[in-house]
Image 1: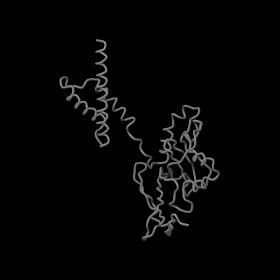
Image 2: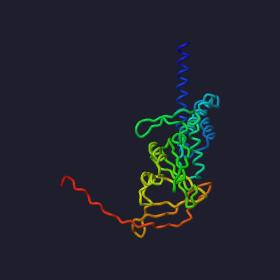
Image 3: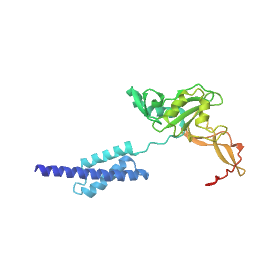
Image 4: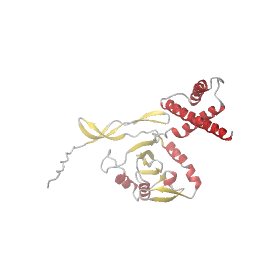
Length: 272
């Protein structure tokens, strides 16, 4: 009976794992389609499997209820994608960054950081690891920070009154670049050399987004667009959701300059 008992236990485990897989697939499908709340999903699945597999008892056994709880716990903790950074008040962005790195700073010691070339041991309390915003001496930059998980550089600029202004996030910035930015004697010159195209208002080297606003002011979006049938650099008003309400740039559309389109001759192949 020992072998038979082991066989039955193995079959029971396999059946339970199969149920978990089925439940996980069904729950995830309904969640992605904007389905019911977690407790409603659980009750529905209990009714479905209780009627299908346990018609005599008319009630799902505790093992199945436990499996449902495990499935939902896994989905709620791991299956949901982390939200992309959205426009929000600057202090909330900083709080999010600090919270995500609380575990790292508590450990102390050093953290091995993948750099552009090789791996480097960094102190656990270094801004590269913690994500803290670092105040800097500059005529147009207030503070900078780095999101090591998503390779985002955050730059808070000064507003026209010299106060902390809007916060922008720049994609695909390496840890090496953040350290270089941190050590740069001129933060403004570094921005023009590495993030933006010098001499333009809409040109950029790194894709960026508005990550936070201050004093309720929404800056306009510098873009390339068409004005009177010609390509131009524009300051276009933007609308964003921040602090529980929709806000719009107070300043109107502005044409910065009309650009001249230059045709570049095609290179000749195979000739001199």
